Image (tube, rainbow, N blue to C red; front, side, top):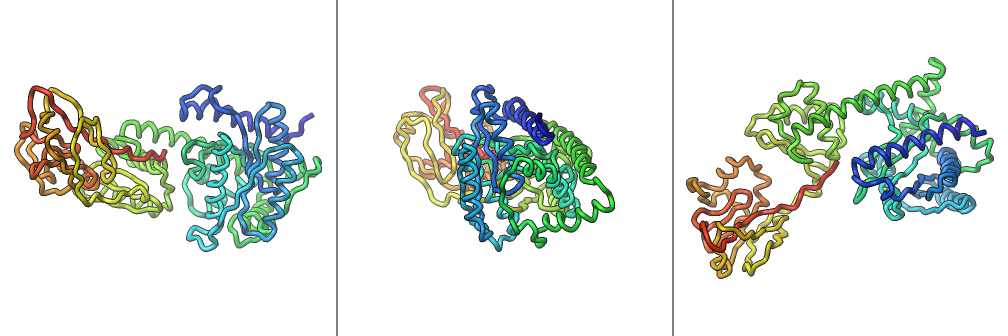
Length: 474
């Protein structure tokens, strides 16, 4: 007869598989279940928790005929790390589980702390191995005690509801994502460390002991060894109640997320752009929830309540003509009039600084690398005379606001004024090409062609600018 640990694990894992391959996977991939290769991997450190997970996952994979991998990360932080890696390899060989390890270089002087740097690099390496072996679901050995420590950790930092909801049984970790979505599953969340230890003892499992787990200079260890025992003495069994509370908070947080997604459908211009004019019809609390969902959905981990309060003030209360440029770790948030946008800092591009000359010989489009897009040539009954275009050299210039352009049925104006009237932000103008023939501007990206060079019949060409799409962060 299966033990409570085995039964709890199997029920949890089946629920995780249902969420990933029947609900969330369809929303993200839009594919049929049979098109998704079903294979599992576990993050295997060799310690008690992951050893129990390895044996439970192996039993499950054999029963269900599912491919199973064990991935080990060598952090190089402990003098026993080489022995741990060898131990994990030997255990997997005995069990017939495919094993792979990666060594990562942890920055002991990281501004985010050793724990955070190790975590980030660990998940990045696990993601690489998952992609290599086409693994869609990675399992970790987080259990109920970890959940309690996580909630207490966030509580002491003054977190909001998202932190108090703790860890979900299914998650998408940013570091795991690159060219594909890899889900993280936590099938041991309902089980205590004590029950896992008892199961390991009953089944004669061998595992490594990490002496750093007793080092209370690490915050989580301090919570585990100092705070939790005191709370257990005052409130016996508080772990179960705290875990239930985190589930209730998690349900409320999911409702807020669903409300935020509903509001985003109304207020979002594109994945990384938000229309504040639409958003201002919401209540203050709903607006705040919308901004949180939009920022988090674009990859921004809100650093603190104080930062969010100040950012919200600038985004919502600055003068309409003010140019807002907020910097946060890895991202820049901008506001132009009533439009908010967010981009990765590393994706900020070098402004084009030199002219490019080209002769059109009938191509449908021409790549303009410095402008990060393509200039298209579309055959039309109105536009630039095709024969005339073939005979002339085109000069593509960087943006300059004092250049003048006369659009159809409009007076000649400076580009700065035309772009302002069109509501195109100043930072986008820098990557919109200006097409000249001699000293005459015949086309400006996103504005249109000069009225002077438009024929209304015959073989004509119309210009069109296609910028490379902004990276999606969601």
